[in-house]
Image 1 (cartoon, rainbow, N blue to C red):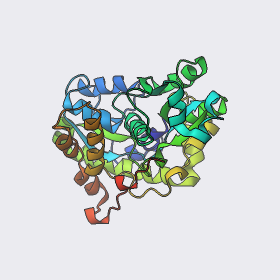
Image 2 (cartoon, one colour; image 1 turned 90 degrees about the vertical axis):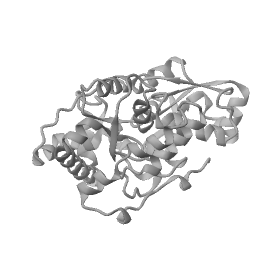
Image 3 (cartoon, helix red, strand yellow; image 1 turned 45 degrees about the vertical axis):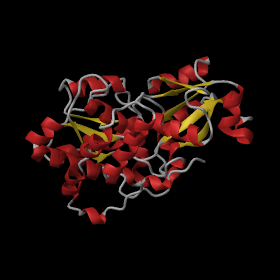
Length: 319
């Protein structure tokens, strides 16, 4: 996934080493693997879906794990792709017209994901019965394009580069970007085991400093071809470089201010949506807020809270 760009850049460009860190990057095939390995202490930290981090901390997905989210890693980047057969009908009637004629089967990357929550929000805002007019199923991102080709699903909500892959193959079209549902929404985060953060605050600080530097590198359009080439390598995404370069285009939501800032308000939005759909207990809101640690992030960058410009959920639209 393209969201891993800051971690890959920090590793490949020696940013971790420059800060005295020895970091081993492990690529996992699924979010379930990542959650399990964090839970059993086989990983100290991971690129993660914010709702999944909340679910793991609540013990709703495998072993209950005390986690800390000291940094966000990306903003925007997801889209809903629908099968090509719907392309002529969608512009005139929209998603409500399609779902009024037949129940659509739509895939998301995980039951506890940004993709799932934003898809549900958009469907409901457009008058679609989320539990009656669509079936939301879970697939690994790498399986979505082949499942669309086989007719096993009618569409999917996934991150870069899978929407570009489907479009390039002529299998589907982009119905809406999630950045047009919630402009500059937080996407992946850095989730770390709380016991590691508590016992090794020095290395945590260095890690965040390195990742902030790497994120700044990734922001520059001039570095996009180099990033795409890195992510295209067989040990990472193993996909065409031009597809990945397109997926790194930041234009969908406009400028992203402080996209890496781990706002507790973002965590609260995710938790309230999870409460809305009945997937978390009542204490989820307080836990989600406590999960995010902006003080760690600010300390790593030497910035004060009032210097951070947040883009929050008042920018959400149902269009």
